[in-house]
Length: 433
Image (cartoon, rainbow, N blue to C red; front, side, top):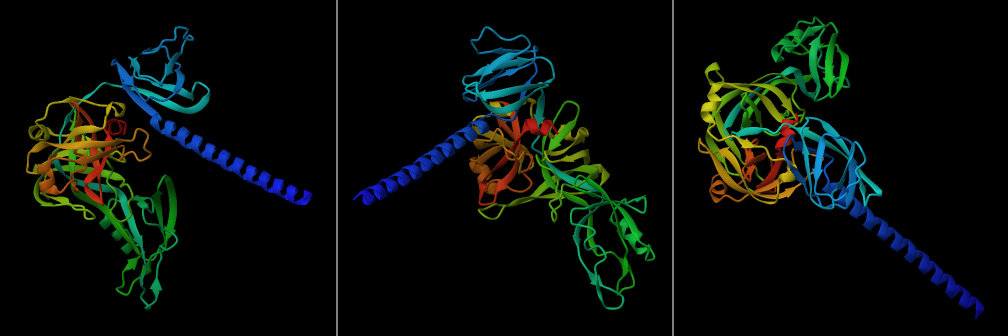
C-alpha cells in the first residue's frame, strides 16, 4: 500500500510541476504580448511642430523625462520637476510645446519602473504645403549602369562562356571602367567592345559597398567582345505629385523608383519631370492591380521640373512655373502621425484631367511601422472613383491624403488581394528624406 501511495504522490507532484511550468509559461507569454503591445503604441520617433501646442495621447502607463529646458509641458500635476528636465506621464493626454528646432530624448519606463523604450523627439518647422494630385511623367537616368542579370553566351569556338559569373551580381552599379566614368548603356557597351580582350577593372557600387572588380571579356560567335550581363541605364513611368511648397520644391510618389527586375533603388544621375495626360484607365480588381496610362512627350517644352533625389520616401526636386498653373489647390498645414485618426479622409488625384478630392477611410495608423511607406492603411469609399478605377491603381502613387484640413500623407501601394485598399506614407516621413 505504501508503494502505491508513494507512486500516487509522485504522479501528483509531476502534475503540479507541469501545471506550474505551464502557468508560468502562459503568464510570461501574456506579459510579453502586453509589453510588446504597449511598446508598439508609442512611436520610436515623435515629431512636433515648433511653436505649436501638440497633444500626445497614447494612453500608455509609461512615464519619463525630457532633459531640455526649452520644452514646455502642460497636462501633468507634478510640481517638483528636477532642474533641466521635465517629467511626462503618457497615461493621460500631455501637451508639449517647443520653440527651438532641436532633437530631444525621452526615456520611458512602464509604471515608472520597467524600461520601455527611448523615444527621439524632434521639433520641426511648422510648414504649409500645397497638395498637388496632378499626374507626372517621370524619367530618371542612373549613375553608371545597373546590372539586372548575369548570364552566358556562346563563344567563338562554340563553347558556353560566362565571364561575369561569380564577379558581378544583379543590383550592382558599374560607375567606372579602367578609371573612366560610365556615362550610360551605350558608353559601357562601347568600352567592352573596344577592350581588345584586355581585362576591365570596374568600380562597382553594391548596396553600401564600393568595390573594385575585374572581368576579362570573351569573344562571342558574332566576333564581338562581351562580358555576359544585362544592363539598364534609365527608367520612366507615370506617377502623382504629392505637394509643392512656396519655393517650388516638390515631393512625389511616396516611395522610391526601383528597378523593375532587381527591385534595387535606382541611383540617380539625372531626373526629369514631364507634363503628362491620362489617356486610359485599366480598372483594378482583386488579384489584378489596375493602372493609369499616360501620354508623355519627352521634349523640352513638356519639362515641368527636375528630379534631384530618388529616395525610399519618394522623389524630390524643383518645379517650374508650368506646375503652378496646373496646381490650383490652397496650401494646407501638415498633420503629424499622432494627429491622424481612424475615419473619413480624402485623397486628391487626377483621373479625368483635373485634380479632384475623393473620399477614403483611414482604417489603421501604424505609428511605429518598420516599413516607412506603409504607416497608413486606407480604403477607397468614393463611389465615383471606384466606378472609374476599381480602387487604387498604378499611377496613383503620391496622391496626397487630406484629413481635417491637413495634408497627412500620400498613397503608396495597393493591396493586390483587394484593390479598394492600400497603404500610405506619413507626410512627415516625406519631409525628413
